Image (tube, rainbow, N blue to C red; front, top):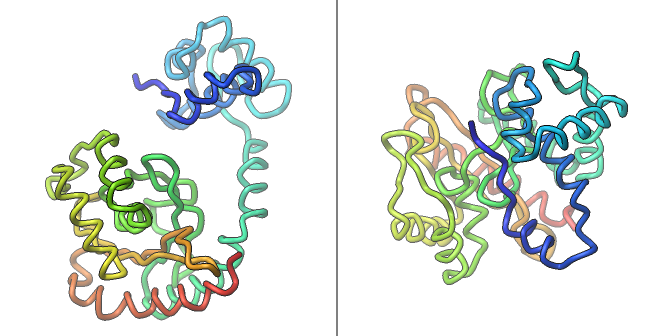
Length: 265
């Protein structure tokens, strides 16, 4: 069973001393543990995933239960809808999602495919907004969904904002594994691909993150030119070729990015 490992930033914060609140860190790890298996969890499961003693995990669960974030019967525990207040607070305060949503709706309608917006979070990308031409989202990538950055079009666009030296160091530190038979796992080739994509102004990934699925992404810039997000359009391989994706979708995404730039501060 996987464990929740601290990021480098969290480890560094611990070394800095009293400003790092250990109990808060542990509570957040317990909350995160519920996303591992997508089912009600036992105390033992949670303690193992969060890498905590059972007694510590239990006290945290009891606190979260009294605060309304967790429900349980002493044997199985699950999150309550109250947890969504944390996510809704982020989405409500996130200017990127607010500005981009109507623009994405328009692009999705024109492309007749789903358009998604992603941010970089450590070694992964997290999707924070989606638009569907039918207003009905197919199963798959939902808001909050995470994918490895190195093998996704949005991830490569976001990693492309790094200098060549920082990019090479970042990829060297990322654990790379095949998501599909098409996934590029050679780190030197990944770096070279991201640099090439940066020069083109878009990234196209063909079945590297998900078999049978390809996507194309462009960077989203704020007013000063800094890349702060990536927007993509994806489709199954039986619906569109890579050439058609570039010809049809890249202009739509670039126009959207240009429209959003002066609105993002």
